[in-house]
Image (cartoon, rainbow, N blue to C red; front, side):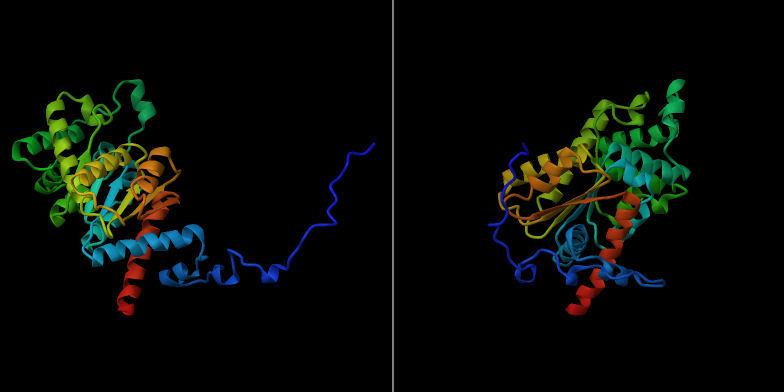
Length: 320
């Protein structure tokens, strides 16, 4: 015998034309064409989901700049390796970024690119004979910066930038550490001991690295304390260290001033990891503020964000 089927004759229906819907033709993208301007491309994106969120983040950065609020950019090493330093440095020079913060690997790659014009060794090949990470010049500069920071009371990132400038590194103009130092904006360096190749060298001082990195944490926390009512925090490619550092810095800032609310956060990465999701996008902005997650390769997403910032900055000026 056949199984019993449900009787659909009593189903209640309605007309789609009369129904409220989430997507309309007005939101659809516009066809692309040869020779179009960046602004035309942005305006042609579908006005839904992540395209809208990208524009919202860009406009939040612009609004923060105009209201004198911090725009903090946290970095993982892969952002530097994918060639985004000059783009981020240009945003800082134009006032759209007020503070860089990174893990140790970003500083290693930024330093090597500044000094040598290349970075990112073949780990597998060099690990076989134990030569992986044994670049004496890289370790010498960064470990000397940690000791200098302790002696002069500079920040760790500040000291690395100062050494790059003082040594007139051949490719210094594209280095975020050096440009931050020249622009007199903080670049704080947040190091986990044993994670970076410079820790493998006899020149590494745990005491100096620890003290310098702790000072940078306190400098970072002071910047986080200013993000309420319109600041922006962007996490670009740090899956663990910077989301954890941000959470602790926010806890310190709110312990001293419970009014740090109504700010924007965003996580840009190739995949969305657990810690950035909870420590950047969700927990910090509750119960007010807004967090965004945008997924894609840094070498595409960072330039796209920068383009949106510059284009909408012009539009918002025209509106005023």
